[in-house]
Amino acid sequence: MKVDKIWINHALTHGIVLGISLSVIEFAALYLGLIFKPALFNIFVLLITLSVYIAIRKYRETHLKGLISFGDAFITGLFICGISGLIWAIYRYFQYTFTPGLLEEIVRENTSVFEKSNISVTDKELYIKLYKTITKPITIAVLNTFLLGMVAGGSLISLFLSYILQRKELPKLNEF
Image 1 (tube, rainbow, N blue to C red):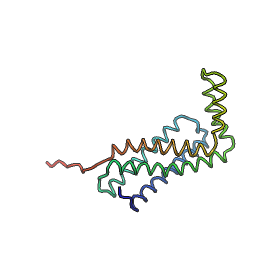
Image 2 (cartoon, helix red, strand yellow):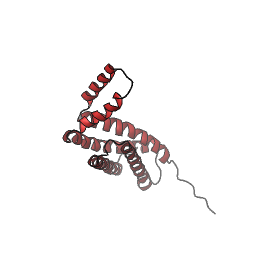
Image 3 (cartoon, rainbow, N blue to C red):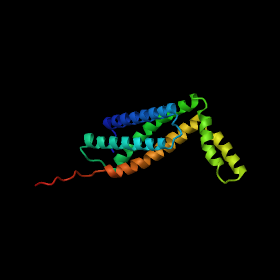
């Protein structure tokens, strides 16, 4: 892969726009009280997939004359997800640090489902204690958002899209 100024600018631009978009959507969901709705996850996945697809396809068509290998497409998508994940993680760190009561609401939402299960009381108490211990703004930002959400999830999305968007030769046009 040829890492040049054009590739870096293209990937950085799309990564920054995606990271800001994810942060704005999460801020709007928090403001509207929709932060704990399961459909929000689907919106994030759809936005990430669509953004990475558009970015790889645009790079392929405008800068590579319609040809891109699987590896180049994968690295481009992963880099875009990494940049956007870094921006989104920084936003989430500040969101969970400066929004009073949000961490307690997360613990309450996630442990309420666990408390309804048929597990022994000691195991439930241990889980709740452990969950309260690890639920900090830095762990949510780094582990949940950046590593699991954008690096691991972004790599799966990039693998899928790289397979779809790879092109080693231009399609032949049929003549009449």
